[in-house]
Image (cartoon, rainbow, N blue to C red; front, side):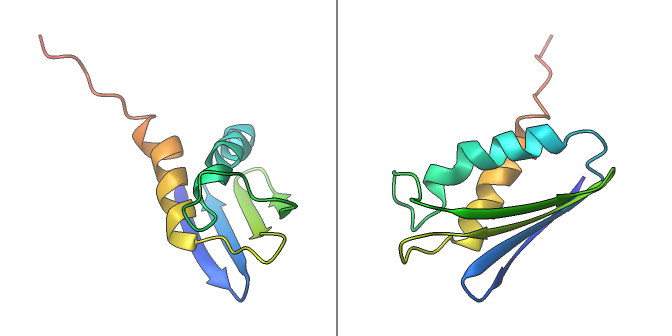
Length: 95
């Protein structure tokens, strides 16, 4: 799976390719990351606007925080990378 996160004005766009049936996991990870992506505050973003377009192998997600807050693209990228890629590759125990 390939992921690209970019800022467009006050929105953050997340593009994923090679999702192939993992769309629900991506949305779950995004939901889990919500509290970590708005200015590094430990609270959830009030009134977020989320737009999702999903195909069989790709997803395009647009995020816009409400109430004058902004999402940080780098924080979203790091959180999604950790949730989707790093936890999926669990290390093999040494023998």
